[in-house]
Image 1: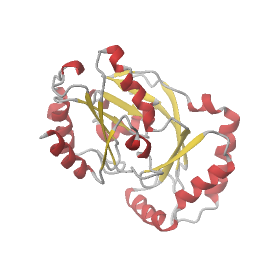
Image 2: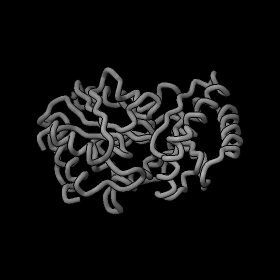
Image 3: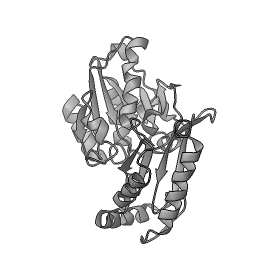
Length: 279
């Protein structure tokens, strides 16, 4: 990306004051689990010269590096704020912020109960194909020193090792048979007192995390910015595709602290940004 080496104004000197644009990743900045286009990265760079930018996604930092960065460019250098795992792993201007531990909060015994239930449930699901990695414990790692940061878990009835074509086929199958919605309902019934939120996102899976640790979790980092640089982000634009109730963008899209923009593809996101900021 030609703009990767650009020198951006300090956060307090961006032309559009006290404003930040936050983006979901899959189907907002990139096709699901694929790389962002050069056109998208160029547009984000141009936007960053006007106001602060960041992303918030459920995946871990390694996956977001694959989608938004390059082998030569660290994703944390392309955004002012990087919020992996809904902000449980967070970076500001390339530097790590405080993280949180899911298993530390839930406890190992309860975690094992839930994992065992999920594995039994998945074994009884009848779907077109099944691949590997049905339960992924997301422990984000800093790209520089491999430091472990405990995050959330992601559950996939088909398995996260599915190919792009298998993901597309499962997504259509899920639309018809509501596999993920039924799975979430079963978990809510089985573990009503665990204090967990189940959030369907992407094409093949759903996230599990403590209630309150949805994508709104990242907003606390933005609120702390006034203590660091003096910037008080009064306008927080959020762009996401899963903004319906039960989708993993719903809570932050509806939050009173954000201005929500529902999009349905990276092309739709680029159109909205260009119109909103005259780019």
